[in-house]
Amino acid sequence: MPEVELPKTDELEEMRGKAFTRRVALTTAIFAVLLAVTSLGGNNATKEMLLAQQQSSDQWAFYQSKVVREHLYRIQKMRIETDLLERKEAMKPGVREQYESMLKKMNDEEARYGKEKKEIEKDAKDLERERDINRSKDLYFDFAEVLLQIAIVMASISILAVSRPLFYFSITVASIGTILTLNGYLLLFQIPFVH
Image (tube, rainbow, N blue to C red; front, side, top):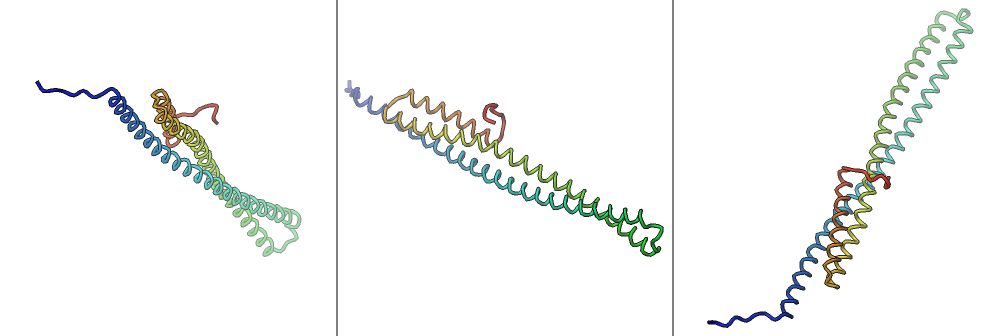
């Protein structure tokens, strides 16, 4: 019968340690990829939030200019109405027609600016909603980044300490970070104390 050489316990322990190290290193690399994806989402959410805020501010400034123009036409209309009431009988027919024509134009312009103002207000509020959504997303990405960084550190420590509990802890923390990353992209749920 041929002789079978059994590996020594030290060699088995070393091989098992190398397998653990490889597994943790691979897992840590996955954590790093998740962190990169999370960081990308967070950066995009921040950019979109800032852009929506700027566009919303621009729309509100445009809205304000429309309001000013609307009020100028309203004041002008009131002056013409007052002039017509005061001097209608004493005006020549051609002058009265000119005043009435100007009054109609002032009414039309006031109505046009009022309508445009409402459209601009709707756009500005839509941009504010977009800003708020991206602000919510950014918060989840921030928490996810922190948790994934902690997971990477804990996994690295588990390699040095050859500690399975630390490795499992890093997996747990990374799992929570991954869920928060998904929520950052999809906004599936809200954490009440965060908002």
